[in-house]
Length: 291
Image (tube, rainbow, N blue to C red; front, top):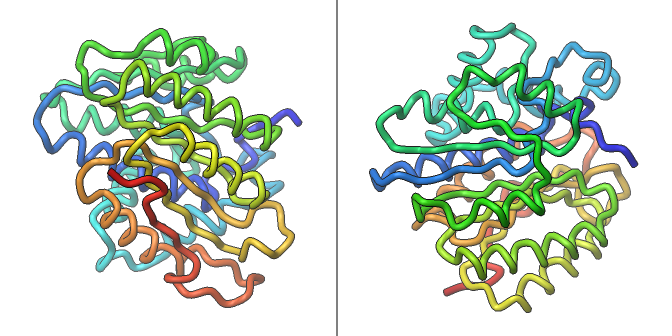
């Protein structure tokens, strides 16, 4: 399968990923010390929700469009920030844009110019790299035509000592992809155990996810947090049941913040076609491995 994110831009999985990314960046910035941020799978940087791909799937309706239509006055701060920053992106580019992770990182730096944050984004696919470089070249983030597996090993440990590595791979072959990602995380952790690693993954093949969790436990890495949200139960056969993120070394109390975020947005993102699920049953924030 040749994955193309333009079909899925702004869907519920993107919303969850970017909300958790915002929370991670905010908490890392609170210490007032420099840090490094890398998006290892940068993609195009900006996506149009009126593109042929987006119009074909209409996935943004159950994601960003649902959030933007909701009352977020009582939402966790990260949700309010997400809405406000998306409005900035749309005022800067056009009203139908949806920004990818490199833009959210770069915008965080723009909003915190004295925080000492250095950011980079890698993209291995030439056409996507060209688009990423063209669309974000004026923003405070380095853009590199580089493979994540080679690139991450080449840049860690960073000079800043603190930092975040975001991995958002396409998962074209789930069992195989999970296995090589476990090896990548284990090797990276050995080289830079202080880093925060955030790996996004799909919830569709639950056997593959459970095996991934077992393999991650066997690495011996401490402080592994799982954050998951389902829009369909795992035993319902659909294209994508939910979305997850495994975070190694999350900031203090990130688990509490993540739980609040996911429980607030779950009723907004739930599918009308899915069996009824409560925020408690549809969200899962737990320590895969503790201290």
